[in-house]
Figure 1: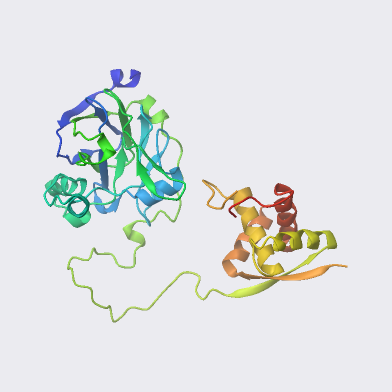
Figure 2: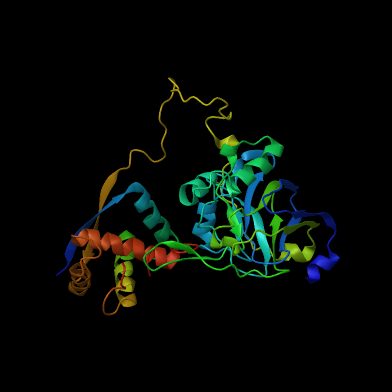
Length: 310
Length: 52
C-alpha cells in the first residue's frame, strides 16, 4: 500500500453488481480493482484505445504465464500484435484465471433455464457500447479473483473464492487502453461464492516505484502492426466474398524436405536403439533422432515456458 | 564401424540447427545432432519420463 500513498488519484468509482465500466486508462496509469466485502470475481476486457482491433488475448497470456497469471505477469494482446498491454504490478490474492471463458446469456439459459440473467458477456457488451463497440467485440476475459483449477482428468473446475475485504489487483497500462472491468454476473455459480458484491475501481498516476515493478519484455519484429498487413482497412460489412485478385503468399512455402546424414558410433547407436525400443519417440532410427534433437533443443535453448514435457 | 542415419528435415529446421551451430554450440550440423543425443540420454539415464 506504500506506493499508493504517493500516487495521484485520477478517478474513483464503485462498480455495482450487474454492471461494468469502460475506462480510458492511459500509458503510465494504474488501475486498481479492489474488493469491498470480498469473494467477488471481476471479469476484464482490454483494447488498444487507438485501435480496437488490438485486444487482450487469454490464449497467449495463458501460454506465457500459465493458468493463473499474477504479479510480474503481463496481459498480452492477440496475434499478430502480441504486445504486453498491461502489467500486473500488485496482487494481494494470487487467484486469477485465464482458463474459463466469460459467462453468457446462453450459459444461464442452457444450464439453469434462466433466459434473462446477469452475465459477463452482456455486461461487457453494455459497458463497451459507450465506446461504439458491439457484442461481437467482447473478447475472452481475464478473470481477476477467480479461483480455478484443473482436475487430473483434464476438466477445469471453479473453487471457492479466496479474496477478502480490501484485497486488490493493480494493472499498469503499457499503452493507452480502454479497460473494461465488470462485476461477474454469476450468482448461481461458485465463482463469487453465490453472492454479487460491488467492486471498487481506482485509477492512479503510476510512480517510479510502480514502473520498477514492470519486468523487461521482448520487442520483436513479429509484434506486428496494421502497417505490416496486406489488407489495410478493417472490413466494414458482414458478408464474406472472395477477392478475385488474391494470390497466396504464405511464408517459407514450399516447405522443402532434405536429408541430413549423420554418422553414429556403435555406442551412440546403442543409445538410439534403447530410445526407439520405448516406442515413444518414433518408429525409425531417423524419427527417433529427430525427436531427440528438437526436444533437446527446446530444453536447452528455448526461451520462456517449455511446451514439451520434461 | 559407424552407422549412417538420414534425418528428414525441412529448411526451417535446418535454419534452427545452422543458427545454433553458428552460435558456437557445435562444430557442425552432425556434431550438434550427436551432442543432442548424448545430452538427451544423459538426462534420461534409465528410462524416459512418463508422459512423453
